[in-house]
Image (cartoon, rainbow, N blue to C red; front, side):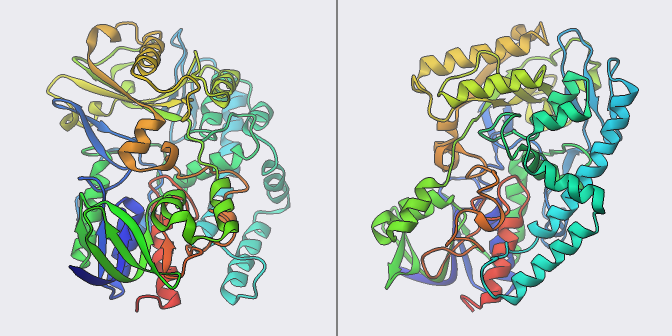
Length: 522
């Protein structure tokens, strides 16, 4: 049996649901097909032990575009925050922690000079992030074509750069070519402060603080500073509540959604996408097909390499998807005690990264397919703010682990996973000595596990490196920018497209605008 729609969406991640909502609001009939039982993609809530739930992949909300939240009525569709504007705390074994608050820096060993330098650093980064927002909220311009819209967008960007002022403009051009390690040494003396800030430039990336492009990575992560997030936020019910709210909004707009509906192939007629075939053999036809999946899955697996030109196959292959982040989840029968932290501070963002050399060494191991013996951890104990995640009086700890190679040289076996998980628990115990006695259950999701769980090539949560040669008009690669693809009638709306990953939503919104503007599936 064949059923036809104006638009069929492959994948029900947050960008796919957002794109579907805007297309439905513009009068298109839209069907969303999600392979998993739950919607939201990497924005998911996962029960890993009876009664204990965590945000399975993404764990912090810090960059959701406020216009999307307003236009899709996410608050009235169920999106609530358990906590906002949380502090980020760089942990020290001796309890002399460094804390970044919404207003500045705190810590016994943080000098007045470093506190003042942080305010200046934040001022500059804020100006640069506002400039990036001008690029992020529109389609990426093609610089070699005579297109009026692209020229206007470039003109607006040029005016924005000019309005920075001469000093900040020169500084932006300089920073774009260096790395977070050098920038941190220029600005600050305190090693914990340097490490905490530089970590935001590499989180989720296959990069260390010395890697070129990490300043852009920092700005990218801190787009939330422009969108009203003055620190990490926790979603009530875990990040899966984001997918639920987006699904509610999409259904209200008229979108039809099917879960447990895995797409086997994107079907072509005369090199134009005409719909999809599901694994069970069902055929669905559509005027256009939009993929929320990453570009490698979309073109290599669903379209198929034999249907692509040789140059496109090469570009897809060269798009880098080197994952380096894992997730650790721990169920606890009580709140852990960290050296030097008061009870309420445990609910903040806790980072284990003693200095920038520590981060760089951890990255060095991942470069060669090995797990670091001294990993870097970004820890959330969300149950401090959201009691629904664990039984009464008990808690869940979730940690992003940098760096865990997607392709472990020795292979991700049960033995290697168990050994690395124990190392991570031992690392946390150095800062929270009594935590091991409180552990009820634990699990480690390696990049290989994330790939299977969330259908992301190599388990890369940005669907591809956020690096200087894979951003803006270069994302994912020439010939597949501006949300189009080498296949007529096939569009991309996921994190492989501009501006990239994070629970920001702009890739989905921008893609919908581009499809509507081109008049496809009208």
